Length: 206
Image 1: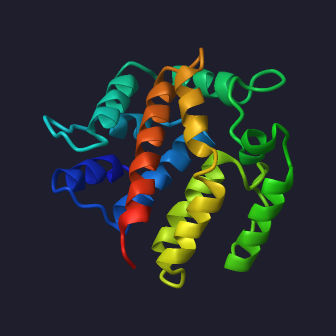
Image 2: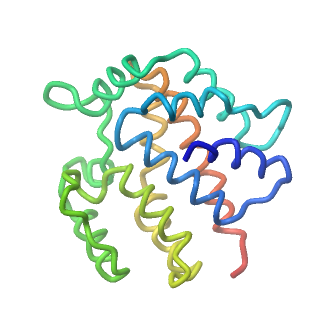
């Protein structure tokens, strides 16, 4: 995990997008959205250096590095809980069903569970969040990309069905959230990355 942001940026300097880099970005987003960052991850983000690189994601990486430099583990923890947990609920709801229907545990979650079952992906017994949590979906996308038994068309369909319909809106809401500082930058990276990945998935012949 510690080298992933630098690896993504390095690859963008050569204007190449490959599956390993796409998967690592999804995995980084999953990590940041599942739990507050620890000191090791914050230190990694602080050290991201894109220089004068003008790749599409470079401004978002710069903002994330700057936001990481300005925060602490304690502040990031407080921010995470204000955004996603709260007393009764957080400022932003990180669930696909919520964005697609206005309610939790609705049909989009049932459809997602059916697709995961068909893919052979089982929910871990120690995971409390439903499968349509944004972190779970990003982690699943990372796994699908790297799964040699899953073809390009299948992981593109997963993106089209379960990520594209709502997740950009989530990342935009995250940027606008009152409590968001570090996570405002996470939201910017998420939004811009999904836009780039949608274009990649639509243009890449397989």
